[in-house]
Length: 302
Ligand SMILES: CC(C)(COP(=O)(O)OP(=O)(O)OC[C@H]1O[C@@H](n2cnc3c(N)ncnc32)[C@H](O)[C@@H]1OP(=O)(O)O)[C@@H](O)C(=O)NCCC(=O)NCCS
Image (tube, rainbow, N blue to C red):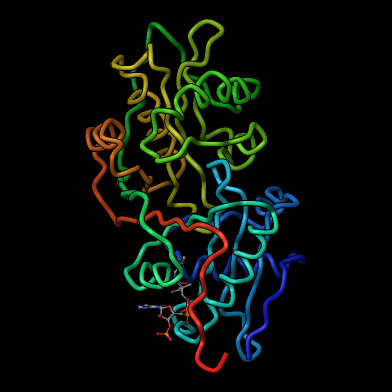
């Protein structure tokens, strides 16, 4: 028998994290404190157990696209094909429907999960490729003459400015099907974790570029590359690569041996920049989307 409940206690949050780490072992999972910081009335985290053992979790929340909710049922490999994923999907989709979302979207990494998603009417809307870079001896880049690079730890007041001046002006250039919808609050919590590992390029009173790393407390030797953006009028002047080389040099000095990033398949500029910096390709993940309410195929006997 399976039971599904809403995550509330620290023990629930830790169990939620353990499912995420089991299903996505190569991806950074936020700490309990970070997950708590992301709590909002719209965000639902659930756990599911089968015969008294936690085997799955789910997440439903707003997404970076207006009108679409994010939905993620995840079941540990040993407990799959026993109906838990379907029950979770139902609970999560009901939650998004009750919040007024008209569509749900998710990222899927393997063919079996794509099959599962298709069964409930999800269709592919795009792909993201993983790019991975081993960190060795990474020299600090030469100091640029036209602008300065500082960490957000040194100049915390620049992070909200980077939202206005870089994030909002560069999101439209991403290869996504629908416009990005990221609030200033999300930028302050979800898009940065350690300000010492996040860098901004500043020219006069303008933030002209951002790049950095999201650190992983479970696997301190691996870090995820955070959002990289350079204002349009500053492109072609090595601002992006200088920022990225700065984070790579920082990584080398802080015991990080590998960094990874997800890039939209069609974002040729960012892929080329990463290739130029020595990144190689990892797995491909598929973005899927369905209109709400989802259509659940009739179960035999129901
Ligand atoms: C996708 C996932 C949640 C499915 O969980 P699950 O508990 O195994 O799913 P269910 O048992 O409810 O499967 C329902 C139906 O989906 C289809 N399905 C599920 N997994 C499948 C697979 N690997 N290959 C083909 N069809 C599959 C089948 O039709 C299945 O019914 P059946 O077992 O009677 O044939 C699980 O594989 C998972 O955690 N994947 C990684 C995370 C992920 O990508 N989540 C997002 C999905 S939108």
